[in-house]
Image 1 (cartoon, one colour):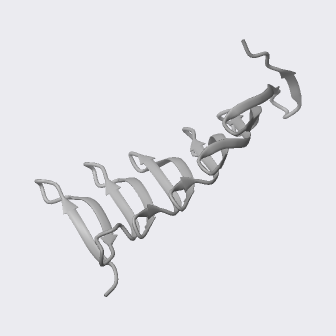
Image 2 (cartoon, one colour):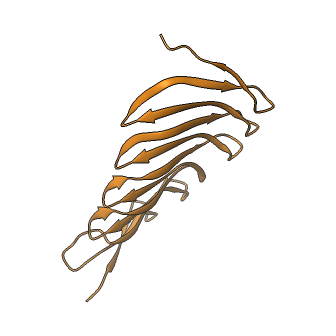
Amino acid sequence: MGATERIERDDAGRVRRRYSVDDDGALDGELVQYDEQGHVEVQLPYRTGVLDGEARFFERGRLQLRMTYRNGLEEGERILYGEQNKPAMTVTVRAGVQHGTTSWFRADGSLMRTAEFVDGEMKGEPVDYDERGRAAKKTTRK
């Protein structure tokens, strides 16, 4: 039969959530949730009841966080956005665990710090960068 679209409304009749379900009632397709002003708050991709694809989170219509899921686990790059809609932080995730380079950025978009993670644990010391992008110093963790 295929997916059936569902729409949930608040008491004032405003759409608060829109999603599709498959013949078994499992979420299938994009779930979109809206705030009271009608701005998108959340976009979540589902395939037969499991998160699968790019998820996005918003505040007052502005993108705050983007992450990707594969078969229910976060996989790939997680990006947190700052006030100027530029990345403030990027995190590499593998099978739901922080793994790889995590980078922090200044408001102007320049690289501020990097750190390496293996299976959720930081390895070595973070590296700080000056405004020109040159490695300035390693930060000592306490």
